[in-house]
Length: 359
Image 1 (cartoon, one colour):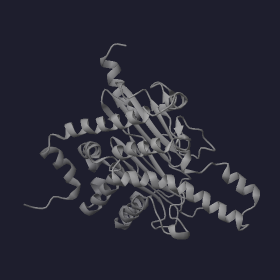
Image 2 (tube, helix red, strand yellow):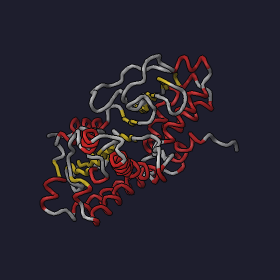
Image 3 (cartoon, helix red, strand yellow):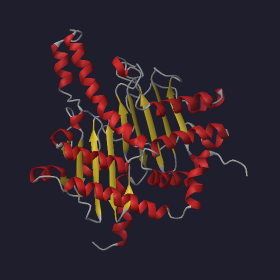
Image 4 (cartoon, rainbow, N blue to C red):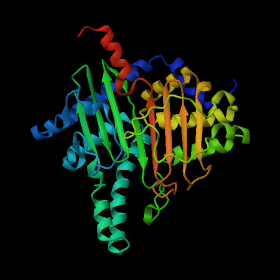
């Protein structure tokens, strides 16, 4: 039997194992129980902070800026007990795959390292007091990541958000159907420069695969894929911009070789498989069924590490953006997002629900 390309494995798995629907239900139940476990430990004051209405507008907003610049809804890790923090990690563990969990917690830990880094610069008198105070005002710390529930797991419609600097995880349940986007991750720095952490890259694969794909393209393909302009200072669909990408640009996957298409699919998997395996397979299968040939790959900037670059994957039902420009055009500050068109925060599922039910 000929060996199937690995990018067909997800679809084949779903065909061979029809019990995946049961696995999805189990996954939802495990998240629900993990959420209940946290809620049961909250005292009255914490409940007033952490438990919000499903209709609260904070549910359908996300941000990646430091808490010192944008306040967050919910209860922060700093105001949790150790037992509650353990339960938060249980919620992360059942919601995300091992790679997704390590990325999320790595992003949180980077905020601690940023604090230590600027502390050392200040004590060495390499930055002045005014700059140091400005940096401290951003409130970079692992303690400033927030958990908010919208509705409760006993409700038909509920969700939760885990968010802070460079991280926004949004899970929305609608009659046991689950929406998992927008899913934002970022790192500053993209590659940690000093100490025992020198060389640590939390989002290295997302960057390396993009660079690998653009360099696999022929000169003619690169010309078609690359837009000649300055690398954006952020992803185009950032929380602050309010922009949406409607037009397709770049090179279409149908114009790629089989090897090039495989790398493109590895990029998609790197984002989607941040989710726990059963849910990731469901989401990945939706992308495959919509047609990999219809996905566009676009690029702006340098074709190598440590220089500013940006890429986008734009498909019929999803969007992936990756930006690494940096504050000083040093290619050392990553923002990346996976979005599901028309169904962020369960928008499409909720619309169908309201059309089919009387309210």
